[in-house]
Image 1 (spheres, rainbow over the protein chains, first blue to last red):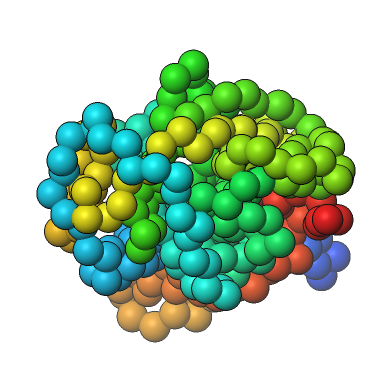
Image 2: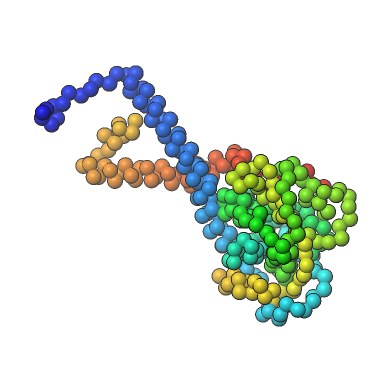
Length: 247
Length: 55
């Protein structure tokens, strides 16, 4: 047995050291790449969820909501919501996406909006309550993955939008998968250039299939009813609205 | 490279282990908070909007 410390060190040539160094660089790059994937799929969600929670709470502060008066009353045609440039103008409540789903919607679909505050409104499309197409986009995954469940809508599902004006209730109608270049889904009457709209629809767009950007998934809903803010939220989301307003 | 760094950290083994962990953590946090957000503006993988050929 050789006493400790006297074992002869193996001689390492310059070439071997160089190769070892290059190997270490490749291993490092590999680890950094994996970390980037972890950042994209996981870290961005943490950041975005915090931001979106803050933005929702801040926007909710300036909203006034009466106590609910029951769902039966008809408040007539919905007013056209005001959408200021680049600002948050509403909160989406989508029970199909989770019973606590409350996310802000902001004017603009740049990465500055989608990557932080979540849902963005295509500025050239119509406003809630206006005849035509109120179109929004959000990420399917990463940055809060707000529209992760966009493929799960079922017959009768309702989507609620709260703005300064009140509560817009949309009902899901259909979903389609299109090519990323098919901007005609954002037309006042989707796929029909020049057609005169006779209804108010909500169009949600996101990525498809998940974790790719090959196609786009488009979910269409139709405005079915409206309540002024003073009449309180629809019964289905009353609890969630109360919780959101309190935060 | 990493062997060299580890050999040149000061102090006893346990202290060098903690230092090494600290260095790794710092590198990861720098990547997560600054490098990746910057890098992602060049990444085409998260587009979710649709053709901007509007109206």
